[in-house]
Length: 352
Image 1 (cartoon, rainbow, N blue to C red):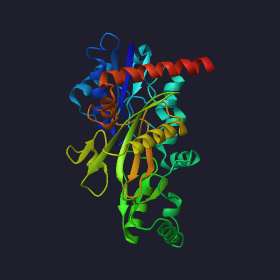
Image 2 (cartoon, one colour):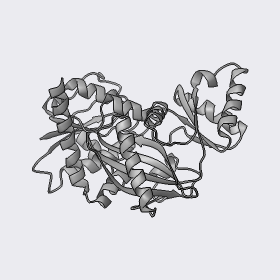
Image 3 (cartoon, rainbow, N blue to C red):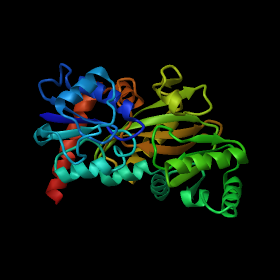
Image 4 (tube, rainbow, N blue to C red):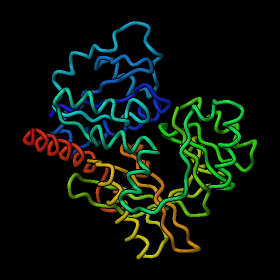
């Protein structure tokens, strides 16, 4: 089966996507998979141009991103695209896991790994995601929704906005662009001046902003695999010395430690797994997702943080490591995701 490995893309997580794609290509070419799958890499550069198999293979081999192309039409696909029987998009961040590429692949009428348009877009937008969680009855931290217009408004409106945030959440709190992944544009604030600066910075990234209350808790994660009847993995915990789990901590080796399985009570493990499955269904996810939680040890409370429908996929990333600890090896996990993509496509085709 010809698998189109789609990677790179127009987002700040371009380089992470290349690393993920390299790991997936290795799994598809492993001894147990090489007879079943032929990998056709398709690289999208930072300018949005899709590249041929030869160029894409070179990027995979070197691990180095290309400069944005000054030539080439964005709507022209490599000739190899017509041969692809199932797509494996591993495009992180905007234009990759927000429903845009999923819409294009849906129009192509070819199976693809992961969530569809709705699940991807809901999970990508933190405000829409939290609305879905609230509707499902999932406990979460207090938050305030903010628009860019409010931040870049008249001198009368902005101070009132900050007053309302302070009243609702107090300090410390976190200011986040609603539609950026991997902690880009996120700030932890402890004072009025930091809040004003963080809101202005977040508004430069996105017109939708979320401000969340700070919480003293352990950060734990659960992986989900499946379609209509998903399964939950063992629980993993992230620990770090930095002020919060920012971009540098997340992607710099040695700055964060993963403990799998997490050392938490069995009852809490079961609660997190059940909540992860509820979150997966609440946003209409499919194939895979990683669900992040806060475990407030002092009170025994579990709060859902977010769901990621296209998590990092290197051999050392949390998602595959959680399944490794649950009993599914990396090569088997990749093969299972392709099987789930084909099954879902067949079901959708029969419904239409």
